[in-house]
Figure (cartoon, helix red, strand yellow):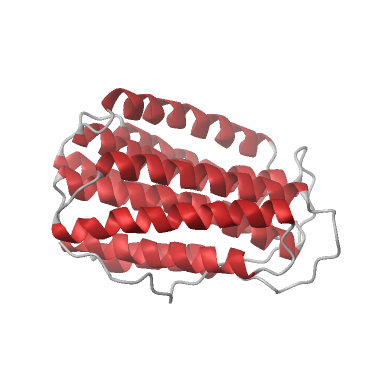
Amino acid sequence: MDFVRYRQAVLFLIAGMLIQTSVASTTAISELEAISQAAWQRTLVMRIAKSHMLVAAGIDYQKSKSQLMDSIKEYEVVLKTLQSNSPNHDISERLRFIKVEWEQFKAASLKAPSKEVALVVMEESDDLLYHTDAIVRRWKVYAEEQIRHLVDTSSQQSMLSERIGMFYAAHFYGLKNEWVISELNFTLRAYEKGLQELLSYSENTKEIGDNIARLSNQWEYAKMSLKKFNSGQYLPHVIAVTVDTMMQRSNKIANLYAANKTQDSLHYGQIEVPGLASTVGADFSD
């Protein structure tokens, strides 16, 4: 399998595809709540994979192990919530398929760490990420176009933060495959693009703008730490903490967009789901 091409295809689909349906929503939770919870599942997939790598590498072992178990429990709670609130047969079938994929990924993530298991965890995480994102895209059609993009974009930054942490920890652990470096660079470019989309949106409230500015500062700090990667200076504890704070900040921004959905008149098409053609400065090498 061409790991680089496969993973880039997954992120490309996540960043750019919107599938249309015409079925009316009958869910007990709101459309934006469904989008937010499904998007949070994307982050949890990457968080679980990252935590497995941190446990394998012995980075903040107890904290990482606890984070792994908590994230597994939370994913299952969210999955049950989405299943009980499915608006149509199509989403129900996709959620049933996701449950099968989830059991496979969970089993791999709970195995005793080894380099072979770590590779399986990364492969399974991408499979589950792809199908989980399809649920986000299915539910997005029920919400206001502008808001759904803003919530999805900021939520996607949360997922990308964890993905950065996963590949960094994997390389530190000893998975020095070329595609690991390639995917780390690819994810960094995707993150930079998404952040620029959020920064450039002209109708952000002051509170949202302040939080995006803080996220941007956190990102600049992360990049400084990541650049030391090239000279063989690993800072796994720093990166683990930094990507975690970036994830939390991104989730807060997504929640603020959802909370402000009824304020002001929002126009369609002023912000797009982040693309993958940006640069983040110097690439990282092995």
